[in-house]
Image 1: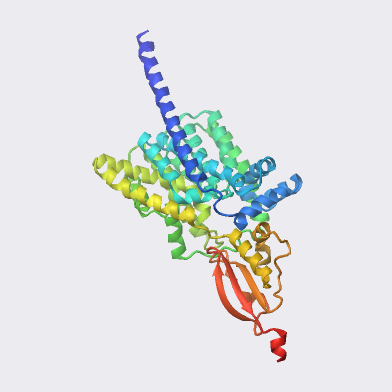
Image 2: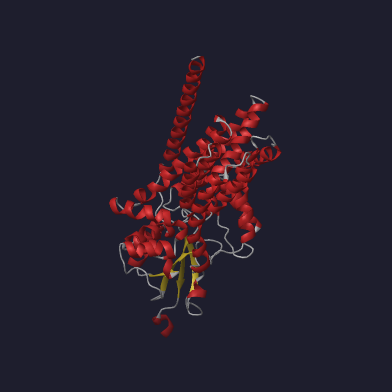
Length: 466
């Protein structure tokens, strides 16, 4: 009787604690959603966003073939996008809303993961750091799969930790199913599963083989389509990527830390703290977070020696782990001195706010302004040419005149709209069009960092005749 009376309050306290954790996760997820929805429609669709919108116009059989044969790495996102865009308007706000929701859910799940792995302070701090990470907010405002990948990474990690702590066959099967689906949110989520494998090797006592075997079978079956796609469906989807330079690697590492130098310093400090931690109970937690945060960068750098894969947005799935590392560092500073935490938190928040403002105002592909400029120039007698041809979808989308763009300059004055979409792709009209020696370059204006308009002229026929 005495045992029962002493046991009930403890159980109630545990439930109350869990309710508070879930409530904190919900509040932080709400903050992440607010930051993601702020100025959500300020930027027009990018070319990649518009592709994901327009591909939903395909019939279901064609759409399924596209997802399986061309876009397997974001097939889960595409399976969500088509029914969603069928029932809502296909404008910027509704198209981007799922990405914002996934970012908020990733923040909430990061709180739960941090509490499970470490403590409540680390979990709540990690959720706040992820919600205010400018890279997370950037991709929460585009209808792409990358925040879904971050959510899948955090969710599969949470289920993995629960399965380790309570190793029932049902928990391991749920984890295996979620991890299998997560791989098709973005193939880079596979790196998170490798981090799980590393933590499992370190975990003691080992879960029974009879529990692990069915989960391993589910994961193996789930991995087969991805292997088949990589081996047999490679149609150059990533053939445009070049081998990364050291400066590009450094830029990516800075970006996943939200372009925030204080967050970068904290994540490094957190990594060092975990590396030096050698307690029996926490060792597998350290392995899990470190391999999740660092492993994708190391493995991608090695793979890129043979097949370049290094693009910053592919690493959004590491941002929850980066937030956990920084939260561990904050916890360590808090334990050392009560004054250290506020002295670090203030510049951390200031740089986070500064980076967020920069990202809200950045508009690398202002197709709306480019279309307006092209229409006005066309009305004034200029020929409008688009390069490359398959990159002009957004210009047609925002322009009212479907016959606005030509692919060969006409007359004596031509504005050439160039979609120069990154350091890997660099287009110049003389290489693409027969402009010289007859045509002369005059000037360039830009509509963001990726869209240029170059003015080229040539003597008119009357001037030549004279």
